[in-house]
Length: 388
Ligand SMILES: Cc1cc2nc3c(=O)[nH]c(=O)nc-3n(C[C@H](O)[C@H](O)[C@H](O)COP(=O)(O)OP(=O)(O)OC[C@H]3O[C@@H](n4cnc5c(N)ncnc54)[C@H](O)[C@@H]3O)c2cc1C
Figure (cartoon, rainbow, N blue to C red):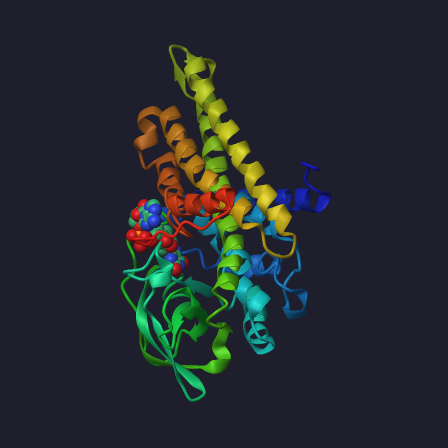
């Protein structure tokens, strides 16, 4: 068991830290939060640096790197803001990975190179207004019609909605009930009958495009099917890598909050001394560091285990659940270190708490992750439906 970074990983971290300083990402993070504008200008730069699609297959323009490297990159960039890390997240651990693993040759050729160049992006479209945790009750339908499927339904809370070029839409094929009827197909942004709802107003993650997707008799060619109904398990397995990315966002936000709190505690004086000299300030900072490190070990274990493939369900669920709770504890503690200034928008702590709070819902709630882990611990499935 080796807990150290390789020289390539160390170099990646240093490159990102240097870029963060050079480009003043701290300032950019505050700006994104106040304007609500996504930093599109970073796409080109990230593409040139090979950060987009670094884990995707090299034959289609990806970097062919192991998952852990994307996780490290997401963590480093999310120390400034999850919005600064978002493109690296989407292009490495998002639904484009599903296409990379299960897609057809044609789908890979038409999407992956564009994602790596920062010209295309893919959104995962699962949640519906009436089906979130209970995903298998989703009601968006794909009905066979000659060489096509006719898509009808509505998706909610879709990250990248309105901005992404492609959407991997989880749909019920030919009205087959239960999970057996669910598959995934690609819908392109400009397909007739496909429209978007209003931009979501979240507590945090300002700048992140997110909205409802509306499908009204959208004609989708059969060759756009990525995962057929009956292969729902495959669709969900690939989601585990996204869970590691979600957890890496938490590591980043919490790491950023710890850094800021450390700096502030050494600068701010009370009773004629820097507040870091009070144990009542030191101990919570130590607890922040302990929780962050524990989460980091879980996330790195899950991601390292994945190699260039997929992580274990148990390890990725545990890593996400722990990191999701950790980031709220750590950012909340950071606010405390800042005293009254922690509550002020002039300092980053309150933004980090708002940004950190999202991850325990996005990508599956901490309750649903515990249900997954319980079934693996007890070795049996606990059906959540009434009467079962
Ligand atoms: C910032 C953000 C980004 C998102 N991005 C995307 C995206 O890109 N694509 C996408 O498809 N979705 C996305 N989502 C949606 C997200 O996946 C869902 O919100 C989430 O799965 C929960 O579904 P829900 O909101 O319908 O809550 P519900 O399922 O209604 O749950 C409400 C509460 O009940 C609890 N609950 C429900 N059932 C059980 C049970 N059996 N046992 C215990 N507790 C239970 C839940 O844990 C939760 O606390 C995003 C959400 C957010 C906040």
